[in-house]
Length: 189
Image (cartoon, rainbow, N blue to C red; front, side, top):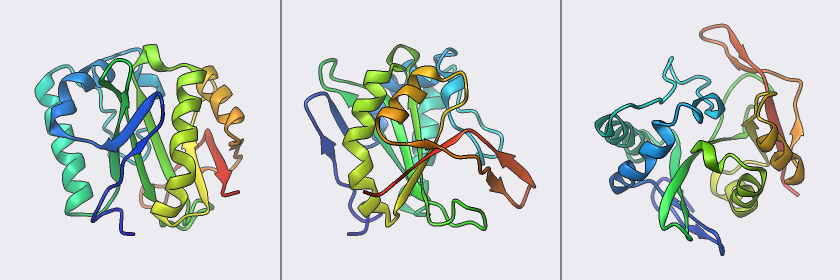
């Protein structure tokens, strides 16, 4: 299966994880316009963007960019995380297979952005359980890495429950000579 030709949808009792759509912009203002959610976003290697948006138009343009990176450049897939009870997107997941000269070569890199009121261990754990196993196959990787800074206690709790282990190794941007820390890794079972 080629994830860049056809993007499957995942679903359980609580969430739907599907390719992002322009129609998600209004819901995602609650994520990308939430200054309390901003410290949990992983914008390592994103050319200085932190994805904080103050206008709906900014979120719409960001979604356009993400869809171009998916459809035309095959760089990554940005999924919307829809809470079934609320019937709205509460965050996004970016996923891609990383090609690099560091220990994360061939590793799937997962970025989970949630609104601050969803930055809870149970929510994060439920999302990780839904996506982790399918992502190994969809992205052709045997490890998945994600970031959780030391202050992200709810996220770290969820990662531990889901079987992720803290890595001492930095993710390296060789072109800019920058090292990023606070990554957690889970290998395929």
